[in-house]
Length: 237
Image (cartoon, rainbow, N blue to C red):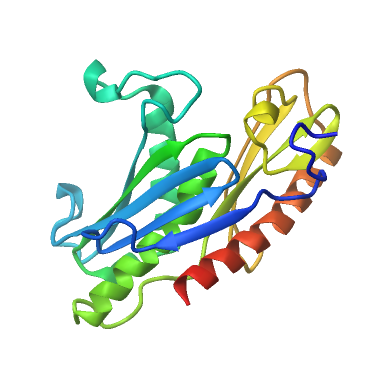
């Protein structure tokens, strides 16, 4: 039995609310069980120095957790004067995942930054950030097209992410914190609706896992992202 009482192949309740950050060109508040992440897309009419003059756009991300997003207050990274290695790794993953589904030539020399702020953390915050970040990005690009900033839609398709793991010897879908903190194996799958794979992160926390365990998690991930794609489409309808 999972701590939450869910079936091994059951995703947590998901909702995506748009327009929460009123001043952003696109925004989405994603709730996945007890995890809540506010994703806001901001547009700038310039690109990083290494892209200037090449006619390509850029999509990047920043990630952070509010001090009381977790059970105990965490110190603000701004107060420390530097980001943790975990924060840097997660925001790079979010940026890579969203850039993979954008035709940057069609963007022109524009930068879109996704700010993903965790309001409440109960496992799967990076996956929720990618899933909600896609909605915020799609809304920002729609705003640019309405304003005739770009002619074609640069989006190549949706992208979503979900966690899976081996918990008490069984492959389970969409880990919450009690499972994530005790899982034998923890994996994150960033996938597309047409069967594409953007990135997979899989780590054996205790011992090892084999091909059969990996394929079991992969099958669960495919099942789980189908519900996420449906939620994204509903939010963008």
